[in-house]
Figure 1 (cartoon, rainbow, N blue to C red):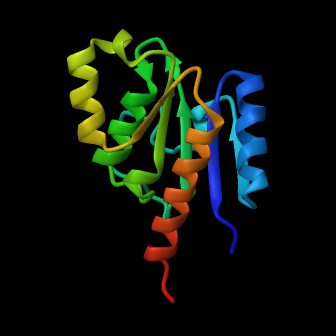
Figure 2: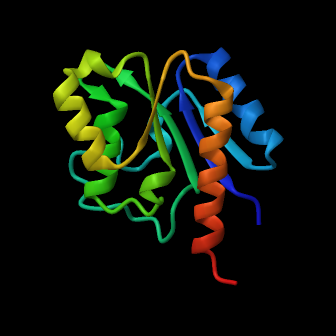
Length: 142
């Protein structure tokens, strides 16, 4: 079974680049500009994720929509039981320091996600994807 990667990236050129990187690795890719794919996004009433399994194996998230940042959604996913491995979530952002450096560092550590600041290096993305693939191999039944 192919690894399923979800890319939520508002910038079309970056979304295409990430899709190309991930497809070259043989992943099944879902890419979108809007985070509506996540049932937890935008819902204030949802008590927990209702999906029986993770909607993807790897997540790239670049979201900055006013009061909602990618970090906000990652925190919500973690607190409401998203089934995606925490270490297989990446937040892509322009500059973490825009979110108050100490607060952002604490929040990122609490969520446990990987952070890629723009501009990112393709080699860094590929290295992280290799780590994710290794975790998925370890987690899957033999």
